[in-house]
Length: 241
Image (cartoon, rainbow, N blue to C red):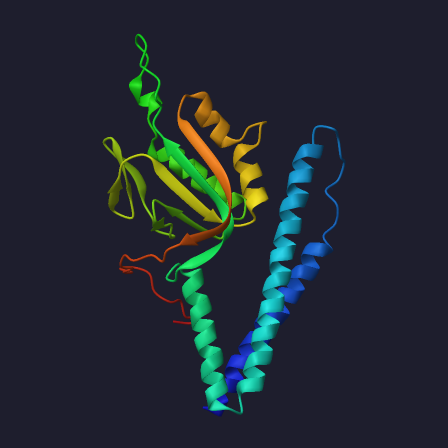
């Protein structure tokens, strides 16, 4: 058992060292060449993405360092080690979407238009479609949302969002409008990303007549995923096999 403990600590320490090298590489990359007025917006966007990635890596490095220290401190005490492992399991369940979570964020409601169809206008343009919800979810992820739900359905890696007539299927459950999309993250960042006056996606939906509301929330509760997860083809990769 003691050998297993040591292997765990060595693995985490190696992972921590790898993240350190990654951060150093990101922060020491050379420039991008000639800068022109046309390339400034693109470079600013790339700079923002790199800074965000570096900050994320630094946070991961800090978290792994704390884990290494926790395992080292618990190696001599079985009860403490069990507590540390249980804490790590709870953390993994949160990452996997298998635990209820809460935090600040925003709540978005999308509903079909209340406009009347005029002439030969396509009435489908006045309905909320799966691509509208998919676009909002994508924007929320890009803005840093840490957990998302739609009408109480937790958004997972394999969540399907697709039209089924006048309704939309989410995690194989059929819902009619309105659709409430809840997201946990920095409220102002999420709000600004979705409602920016110079191209926010929600403004575009409102332009086409859909009913849209967005609200910052100090506390949002997002439930755990309750469906089944079955892998038919996916398996752990072991080098050399």
